Length: 260
Image 1 (cartoon, rainbow, N blue to C red):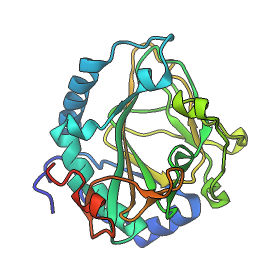
Image 2: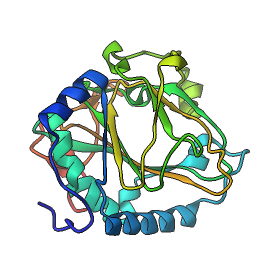
Image 3: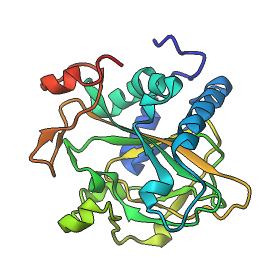
Image 4: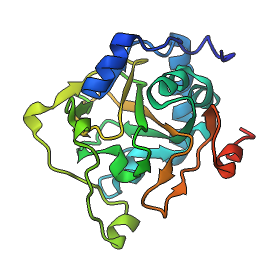
C-alpha cells in the first residue's frame, strides 16, 4: 500500500459494484479522497492552473480554456494518486493484472465557462485496444447541474465503438467529436468533492456549461488502460504511459516515466 494513505481512502470494489459496472458502465465512489488529500490536491492543481491559465476567454479553444495535460508532472499529490492511489487497484479489478496510466489532466469549467461539450466516447478521442480502458473523474468541487456536471447514458457502453470520421484538418485543430445520442436517457453525475466517477471507454457522456455565478467545476481526469494497449489510430503503436501494476510486453512502456 502507498505511503500516501493519509490522502486517499483505499478499498476494493465489491462483487455487487463489479456487476453494476458491467451492467451500467459506471460507478460513483464516495470519499475516495480524504479531506487532507482533497485540500492538497486542490492547492497543487490551482498552482499549476494559475501558472498557465487565466479566466475563461470565449475567444479561446475548449482545450485552452478547460484542459491542463500531464498534471502529474506538476503535483506530488496527484502523481501519488495516479500512480499509487486507490484507483490503481480498482483499475486492475476492471481491466486486468497489467495496467498503465493513459492520461492525466485537469478538466476545469471555471465560472463563466458556459460552453457545453457534446456527446462522445473517450475512446473516440484516443481509440485504444483492447477495449477495456476506463476513465476516472475525481471531483475537486461539488459538481451538479448548476456548475456543469457530467451527464451519461447508463448502459450505452454496450453499443461498442462509434467511429466518427474526422479530416486531418479537424484532427490538427482538436475539434470536438460529437455523436448522436438520446438526451431523454441521460442522467446527471452529481458528486461531492472527494468523490470519483469511473466509467467504461465506450460510455456516452457530455457536459453542459457552468452557469454558476460563484462556483467552479474542477475535475481531475485520469485514464487507465491495459498495459499492452495500442493506439488504433496511430499504426497500432503502444500507448505510452507509466506502468502502475503488473508487466507489459512493450519495453518502451516499461521504461516510460520510470524515474517519476
